[in-house]
Each structure stands twice: as C-alpha cells, then as structure tokens.
Length: 483
Image (tube, rainbow, N blue to C red; front, side):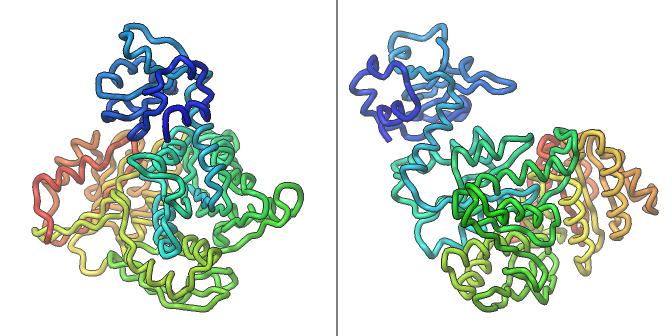
C-alpha cells in the first residue's frame, strides 16, 4: 500500500504538500512503538493513556521511519523530517479507519474470537483448521485491542504482502472495559463470531461484576454482520445466553444463526468420551452433524478442548470435513508462554503458562497438575492475579483452596495479593510448610532454581503485569532442556 493510498483512507489533511516520491513510497510495515521501529516503517504517533507517541516522533525518525502520522505539530524536526509528516484529525481513529477500509474493500470472511481465556489458542487452532481452504491470516500474538487489532490488519499489507493474498482472516478481540469489542467490530465486522467463555477477568472495571464482563463479551455477537454465525459455548451459561441476541431475529441479525459447542451431546459440535493424558494432551470423539471422528489433541489440559471445539465449529461452517479437522487439530502446538511443556535433562518438568492468569484459568491448570502421574512433587508458582478489584481477596483465597483440594505439594505465591492465595490454601488444610510467599518474579526465579529437583512438575502462572516468565527464564538459564 503506497503512502498516497493510506493517506486517502486515513484522511491526511496535507496530502497535496507531500512530495511525489513520498506519496509513491510503500512502507515496509507499520508501528506505534518507537522502540521497535525498523527502517522503512511508517509510525503512527498514538496518544495513549500513559504515553503520547508524539513525544517519540524524533526517535522514530532516528530509527529509520519513512514517515509518521500525527495530529499535532512536533518541535525539533528538521525540514526533511517535517516533509515526511502526515497530519490527521486524530491518529488512533485514523489507523482504525485505515484497517476498516482495507477489510471492507477486501470483502472476504472475517472470524472474530473472544473469551476471558484462551483467545490466542482458539485463534491459532481456528487458523490451523481452516488452513486447507486457502491462505489464512491470523492476528499475531495478542494484537486484540483498539491499538492492536488495526495493527494486525496492517500486517496484511506489510513486508510485500497484499490483502488479496489472503482468503480468510481470524482476528482476536479482547477487552478490559465496556464498548471495546463493539469498537473492534466496527473496525472488523465478523462474519463468524466465537465466544469461548466468560470469567472474572478485568472485573474491577465493571460495577456490575461478572454480568458486566458478560455483556462486554456479548458485544461481538451484537457486532455480527447480517446473516452471520455466532459460535457459543453451551457449557457456559453466560455465553449460551448470548444466543438470544441472534435468535430474536430482528433488524441487523435477521438471518443470523447460532451453533453451540461443548462437552454435551446435545451441542452441535461436541466432545464425547474424553480421555485425559495429562501433560501429553487429551483424546475425544468430535461429534458433529456431519459425522464423528476421534481427535488426539496434543495440548495439556482438558480446558483446551473448548478451543478445539470452537475451531472445529468454524471449520465445519466453511466446509472443512470432520476428518480434516481431526488431522489439523493433531498438529496443534501451544503458543509461547501458554501451556508450554519444558522438560529438563535434570529430570524435572516446567509448565510455562505465564502469559496471563485469572482465577478460573489458574484453577484449570492446578487440576491438570493434580492429574499428572508419577510426579515427585507437584508445585504451583502463582503470581498475583490483577484487575479483580473488590473481589480479589475472595477469588485468590478460593483458588488457594482449589490448590489444597488438588493435593498440590508446594504452593508459591508471588507478589501482593498472592498472600491471599496462600491463606486460602492453608485454611483449606494445606500445611503452612507447603506454602511460601515470594516478593516478586525475580525472587521467584531464584527460589525456583534453588528448590527444584528431579521428579518435580512445576506450573508457573501469573497475570501479565507480574512478569512470571522471569521465573521460567531463570530456570532456562541454569538448566538444560532435553533434546
């Protein structure tokens, strides 16, 4: 996409003042982070809640930005740099508008995926299931909010790519407050919307608690294109109830449909006869209206079954056969820091689930650990869970009680509210000697290196802000992985 094309979509007000050479230039890629700008990229100076990108325009130019998009003048620019400034009314809105217009012109199927847990895995499995139908674009990492989603779309026209190179787009849609997913659906209106679950995540931002989280997630169903498909988890009542939005059958949802998935034989896409192989994954019968097939899912934990079912439902909608779905799901691999199984030469195993955490997700992985056979010790190293607001004390304590009931041998709580996790475990019967409070993730890494021993199976988890991946990195620096 040439700069003159982007400028027309973004509403650049000084297009006529730009040189013909600059207008004809095609950026290598797009960025909103001056720290990662590469030569030839276009930099959007976004004003966020903490930082204002306009303060980093000079740095972006120094790192080789071909041009910058901004909505106010910046001091200290050279004449040559000033000639490469594209002015818009507001930079975030402009970037979002570019993404919307690119998708609207492209006109091919968009799959939107949301949920309190498992969005990235659900997105990756969906892209895997669809991969035989053509070239699939799946949003990278966690580019799933008002900044990230438009950047994800712009990756479809980066590094020589063209929108027409892709046949389907699978986009993650996240939220921390009301209205965020509604805005994402304005940018990228989904033909298919999958809702995985609703859990107490970002609950401190909702005065009405979990119901507020549910309503915010339901925005993706409200945002469906006319005649679209909502794929809903029938085992989660808050998700299943979103069908009412579609089944009312009025207005913009006339002609839209609902498909249910779950571990319930009444679901349109069901997992039956589940066999849990612990860290080696699960097996289940995929039961659909188009036939049945046996799935071997190489992801550790039964909670991943729901991600696989949602992906299967999307695939079935677009004509993928059950046999092909089974084949694709069998190729699944965990995303980085999302349930990675690390086996070390010294005879212990670490489950790196450090990307993020919430009470339900922590409880799921603790239950997984309890099912691992022949472990010397079952250890959970859990960072505090953030954005729980007034519910934090109770929810941490309840998760501690789950750890106690699952027979965890050693429970480490890292930072702040993790003290309530440990208290809940002790109140539920865990010995005080089996609990340890650690001040931060750096100290957690040191503790783990000093205390881990052959035969141990360790789960490491925590909210993004706690940076629990540091504890895993400390182990990787000290010990060697198995080949």
